Image 1 (cartoon, rainbow, N blue to C red):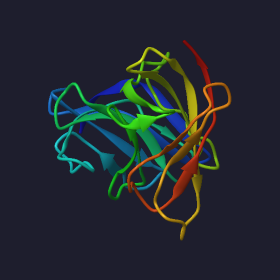
Image 2: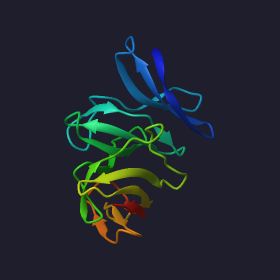
Image 3: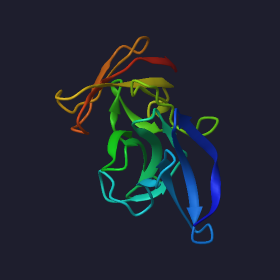
Length: 178
C-alpha cells in the first residue's frame, strides 16, 4: 500500500509511471501500470549496473521504457538509466567520458525527471569537470547493434564512445557553452 506519491507522473496512452512511497513513506520506488497489476520498475537496493541503487528519481515513460535518474554505489554518484521492469541499462553516469571531457554532474532540471520520447531518445543536462555544460540527447539504435553510446557535438566538436551499456547503440547532439 502506498502512503504517498511523488509530484511527477508520466503517462503515455494507457501506460503510467510514478514514484510511489510506502512503509510509512520511508521507502520509495518507481512503478508502472496500465489498469492491471502494477510492475516495479526499480527501487533502492535493486541491482544497478554497478552495485545497487541507493536512491531513484522521478520517472518518465514513452509507453515501453522508463527513464530515470538514480544514485548508485555511493550517494554522490549519479546516472541516467532506462528500464522496463527488468535489469536497468545505464545511459551515462558521473565520471564517464563525454565530448572529450569527463561528466562531472547531471544538473537537476525543473522536475528532475529525464525526458524520453516515443523513439527512446533521452535528453539530459550535463556539466563536465572542465566547466563546459549543456544539453545532450542519447538516441538509441535498435538491436542487434553493439551496446555502445556515441555522443557527437555540434558546437563542442568531439565524440564520446562509452563502455558496454545495454542492448542498443545511442548517438546524440549537444549545445554547450563554456
